[in-house]
Length: 261
Image (cartoon, rainbow, N blue to C red; front, side, top):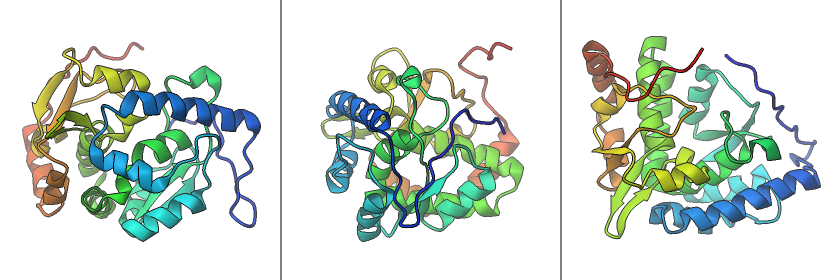
């Protein structure tokens, strides 16, 4: 696993993380800019979650503040982790209704794009929808399945996660909207994903698992749910049988060029 240039901030004995003024200003820049971009583009369930979390605009929130809201809505919590964690730890946390949050924030040099998830991506991108029972149930099911899966099966589960929780779109009565946290925390991708440039396909779990992706480019293809409740329905299906079917069928040809060496 590639090492991160960032180091997670450690809490004191009371669980408080003392961020610097520079770090708080970075959060303020990110959240003010991103709210303007996503307010007309995010699904209503996400916007409802933003309201519930009442994220501060002028400072990085403390994890205890996030936990109070998540615990009271869906029984979830966030868990402080280093910048990068192994698959095994990731699945363990999700299976226990804990969402991993790396407690560092990007520098100004990485303001527009950061390859590894920081606290802004995790809190702003993912936590609002963890207040939604459909999204929370799917994420919990995903964690339990991943914990029991083989390394080969996990690769296919990872594609399902990428095409839903990170980069998913959803059709709503008011138009196509974003629910994937990877898009919601990215100013460029939030605009690009709803444009006519990328391809959009109706969501199909089997197809999602067979679709290669790259983490360092704007996605060439997005899967679109008919509604967010489809995630809850998927959580009730035999997802691992779909994994085995996808493994037997193999991957589709990538819709992107290979990464330069």
